[in-house]
Image 1 (cartoon, helix red, strand yellow):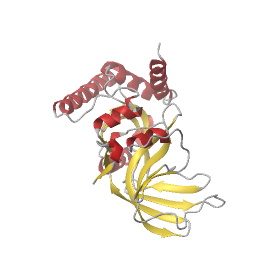
Image 2 (cartoon, rainbow, N blue to C red):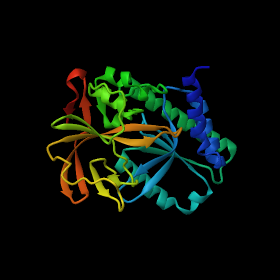
Image 3 (tube, rainbow, N blue to C red):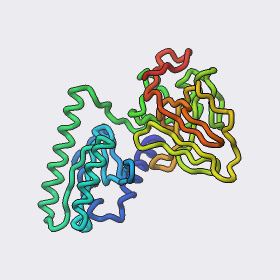
Image 4 (spheres, one colour):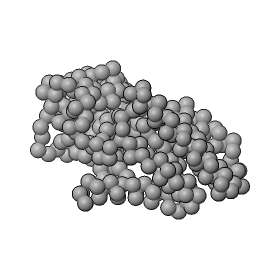
Length: 290
C-alpha cells in the first residue's frame, strides 16, 4: 500500500469520525456515500458556513455541486422555523442548495427511500455539470499538487486549491525557494504574497469577512510585530491563508489579491481587487485577472 493511498484512507475515516457520536446522522451519511460509490465527488461532514451574523455546520456537503444534506433528528421538531431561516441564509450567502432527510417519526423504509431519492438528485446534478463541462472530477491529493495548478494556468478563490508550504506557493509565481517561513514574499515593487492566519493568534487578529472581500487586521495586546509604515497602498497582496485540513496538516488557500485601503496605528483594512490569477508564463510571475 502506498503512502498516498494510506493517507486517503485516513482522510475518509477522519471525515466519518467527526459524526461518530451522532447515530442517525452517521447512518444517513454513510449510507448516502456508500450508495453513491463515486470517488469523483468530494464530500465533507460538519462543513462550516459563515453568514453575516451566524456560523452554521452543514451535516454533509459536496463542494463541487454546492449541495448540502441536513439530517433532521428529534431536536429539529422544535426549531422548524429556525432551520428554514438557516436554509435561506445559507442559500443566499453561499449559493448552497440543501435537501433535508427527516428522521423523527419515520420508519427504516421511509428513511431509506428518502436517502435513495437524494442519491438520485446528487447523481443528476453531477451528470448535468459533466455535460456542461462545469465540474472537475475529484482526485484525492490533487488539490495539493502544485504541478496540477500550473497545468491549469489559472487559480481562483473558488478552486479550493491547497498548498502545503510557502515554497509550493512561490512556484506559482515563478520563484524557486529552498525554504521560507516569513509572512511575506516580495515579488516586485507592486506585488507580494502574504500568508496570514485569518483568526486571532499571538500577534494579530485577522478576520476575513463572510463575502471574502475584506480583511480586517489588528495587532493584539503584547504582539511582537508592528505594521506601521510597512504596508503599501500601491501593492497587491496575494493572500494565501493558513489553515489545517481534515487530518490536521497545515495548508495555504488562495483568497484573492488585496490592496490596503485603510491604515491606522497597528490596524489595517484590505479590500479584494481580484479573485483569480493567471500564471501561464510562470517565469514572468502571475498576472492579475479581475
